[in-house]
Length: 130
Image 1: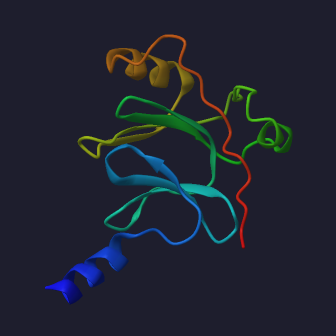
Image 2: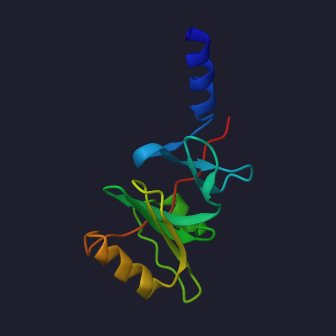
């Protein structure tokens, strides 16, 4: 039984740096150092690169694409996307992902989910790889 627990533990433990998100999700770097969201049980949920993200309760929401370099150095600057920026919403309780949303649709969905109106997303800090 102890061996089985050790094997399960190894299979579900993230390797390297991560940001823990609700309900078994992680933000972690891909091989190029770009942020992606993965599920603890395995598998990429939101592919890299993620330009910005934030968490409100069980909702993880953000923007797809590369983060501006200056914004990654100063994480207190909220992300402002352009006309072509696409957004995502991950409900971590159900696992439902809505991706490729335009800003207006994204904002409406966040409101419908009860996310506060002052919700802002921020670029992830650069990963420190060892």
